[in-house]
Structure formats: C-alpha cells, structure tokens
Image (cartoon, rainbow, N blue to C red; front, side):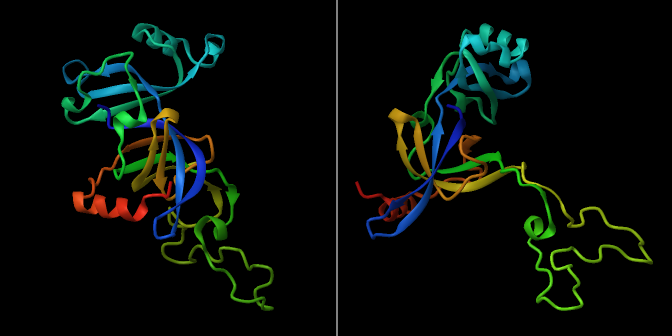
Length: 236
C-alpha cells in the first residue's frame, strides 16, 4: 500500500474533547487517488507508484500535455490534473498495486496515526523585513529615527569584508515555498466523503494541493495512542 496520498485543503474547524477543551483541526479531502504507473527496482532502479488526483473530463484534455495523455491511455485510466510519485524503500509496502487501482483515505490512513503534510505556502508578494523576518525596528517614535521605523538599517561594512554576505535578511519575495509540517495526529476519518481531520494547521490556502504521507519520525506507541484517543475523542 502506498505511504501517502494527494489531498486538497478544505479549511479549518474545531472539535471538542470530552473534557470540554476546544481543539483546532484542518479538514482535508484526501483522495481518491488512482494508480497510474507502478515502478520497480529491476526496471526503473527504485520502487515507486505514480498516483493521479483530480479527475478531469475529456473536453478539458487540452489543459494537460499530450505526453501525459499518452501515459493515461497506456494505464487505461481517466485523465487527472495532478500526478505524484510515491517512493518506498521496500516493495512489499506497495503490495499488489497495479495501474487502475483506486486508493481511498481509509485504506491508507487510520485514527491516531501521525502524518506529514507537504504543501506550498501562501504568497505574500514583496514584503519588508518586519513581515518577512519578524524584525523589531525602532522602539519609539523618536526624532533620531527619521521615518526609518520599519527599515532594515545598516547591512554592510566599510572595511573588511566590505560587502553584504549572502543570506542577509532583507526585503523581498515572501511565501510560495514548499513546506512540510510533521507529526500531525489524525483526529477523524469520514471515508464516505474522503474527509480526514488533522491537528493544527497545514501550509497553503483553501483548495490548495497537498501531499499527506505517513510520518517520517515514526508512529506513537500503543499506550500513547490510547491516551490521545481518550483525550481528543470529539463528542457525537
């Protein structure tokens, strides 16, 4: 079985624990994803599976390349807007997956599991050092500041080295970066609607494309799972 699926960010909401505590969660529409291609170590040098997400109609085939259309026809599947290759270290994790198989959220993930969510952060455009790097600036509106309260200040030296080092925190483009949030707990799964709830926030805007995979840092122990489930189980 694949170790991750493509998803779409629906938005954020909140659930309540039996103790009455409020917990923020993100609603994700995970899958369904269709297997487009199976790669093997003997033929391709590594074991992986290519997943398709976001089915599109034939009348919108002009939105994707002819090369991708050929891949879909070879696999015998429909057309998809997004493709994602999922590599695994052991081919046994993929089982007997073959092109055309459909993976749903309840087949890959389960409650109390830790997941890593990867997405593209929101674009903020050209931002100053306050918003981009969290600098402080002038402590008060003094006469010596002279309208430089939100400026970066001096950035170089007159003598050695006489230059601005690479990586200096300066104004510039902010956002649109690939970011991964690790170790988020799966708080709920609704298989009929392909919905999954995870704790906290994930990168990107609503309707943004995400990749949800099993946590790289491992899963919690059985006792910890039971404790978390008892504390975070929402009221029905």
